Length: 284
Image (cartoon, rainbow, N blue to C red; front, side):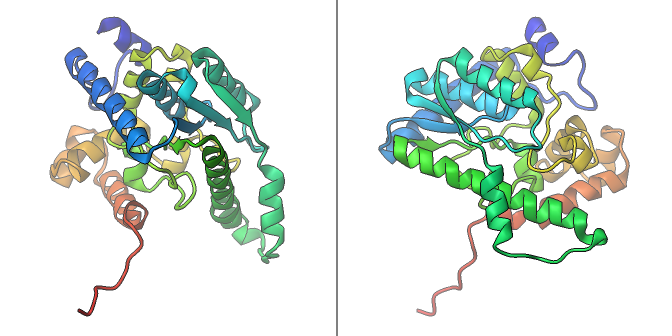
């Protein structure tokens, strides 16, 4: 495992959540079986993945090819103006390295047309909220619509790329990047996604690449979270998922109680993103 660990990260703090070699092999078998079963049960010809050039979509693409073969996987690149050219180049390289077909569809003009239909007033104080909530979420929902347009045409299942850290804190747009048929990485923390991607042969540069959201010009995921992914993984694993008391979690992760409570708040406030829309109980 030494080479694999070196490829993902020399040292992980505060807690190393990566699998042993035996566990990793078992997890790969489990996830490839899951992807195959989802495709077979849907009666479709394969899978579609939105490729961003980030580690999550890269890992999902590698996993899908492992499960289905390259001929059954189709990639979709959906760039916005805020996306760095390097990200789109990385996404295209992933598709080419895996030998899968792919399309590139620009989304800015579609987003602008949608936003222009509702001329909302916003002043300087609300500008940030407009960019993040409306422009960002609308962009994600346009991408979802294009994913399903192409997936329906290709008769393919839409594979999500969300990991356990993102889904657990609501770092996903409802009916946007959260609008998928299944999430193969949904039970893997970010560390584990990196480890899986490295194991499946993803380029070292992509394994270690700093994650960015790619919806608005806000910088990195971790800047938006206010906490780094390794710490987020650890707090989720120990306290939110594992039931370790908050103060003990703060001590074990060498963070503050405020950080732990902040992650809990994100988890609780995003519960609606992880559950189906509410319906009233039947009267009879």
